[in-house]
Length: 202
Image (cartoon, rainbow, N blue to C red; front, side, top):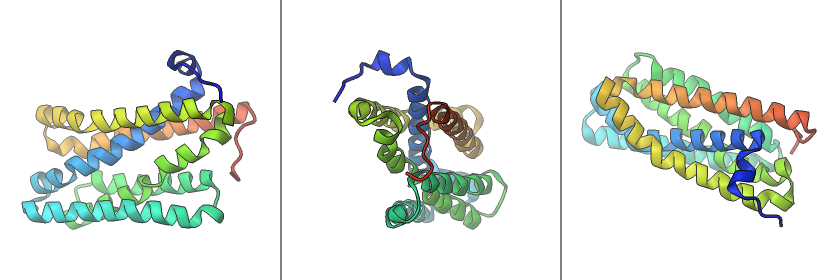
């Protein structure tokens, strides 16, 4: 195994892109996990206990997403599973953005969990294929570090933004994270293609 320093990794655009993907997907996960019930109570008129119960639906969606992704691992490629998860996230966040009844918003949260749940583990799984086994340990460690940066930053950022603009902008925050993630994912795939490292069948 060859160890890369953080600076060596930061100089490579494809590694920076994967860092952004990991940060964004985990930021979405924890922004929903920490603030989802607060949004339902404050914006959708849920009682506190119903908001907390609705959040279990979100985590149920995430568990199903990861479980089904694991079941499909021998039948559908890892890249395809990431694509399916990313595609599910689009209507999920659209539901969150639209002024729909609270029960429909809960469906949106469920779909966020369902779609987003499989992205992180599948991106980790692809690391040796994308970067080579000899440097994968260093890169995998850095990916996990950026995932935790997303975990740490997302909840206080929602708190700050909602304090300034109101909790109503919470779905916009999720949408911005999603757009950032999709752009980074697209750029990452394009970069891998130029290096002849993209294998859609992996």
